Image 1 (cartoon, rainbow over the protein chains, first blue to last red):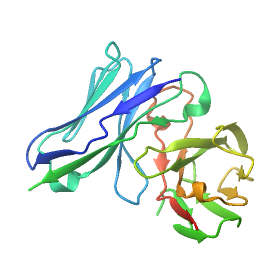
Image 2 (image 1 turned 90 degrees about the vertical axis):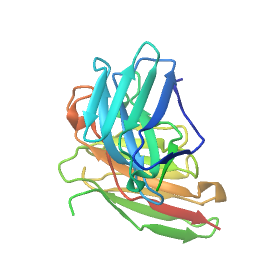
Image 3 (image 1 turned 120 degrees about the horizontal axis):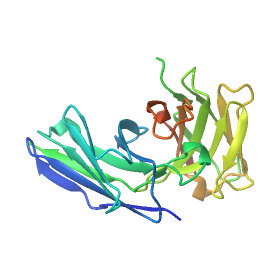
Length: 114
Length: 119
């Protein structure tokens, strides 16, 4: 079955630096990949979707890359701010059918310090 | 507020009791999903509906769990004879099926969740 791996250790960075989070997957080739943000006690909030034929996608200070050869997505936050502190989840759809149910990684907690 | 809403936000119950959660999706969305999330883990898929039809159920969804979406709008998730292992955040999400994988309408919008604690 498909497996998703994200760094389980928290990432601590200084304000203004670029945060880079990694999502690796195995056992299939998804049509797209999504990144979500989750704050404590809240539901995930959609950030970006990148399709298999796209190498990179940007939205304001966010950038996502998708390397289908390496089976890896990188999520970057440039000029990070304390308000960016949250858990970031990557999610993949099923290989076939499945109504777009998502399989999530465990998430990486980001802490941006002053 | 036109987002996904869930009620109640918190539920504390004793082992063996039945509980029911409600989810109101974004009004024009035809797909509705239930996920469960425990501490330190990502959300895990439980079941989903296309309009009123329940199209898939995870093996995580034991016989004690039942979900309905009677008119293709709101949905309920009932857990019978709750166990301590059922303690988790129950998340609902909705989306609009575009029929095209990775299309902009495949985004799932999540509600705030219902936190269940079974004593």
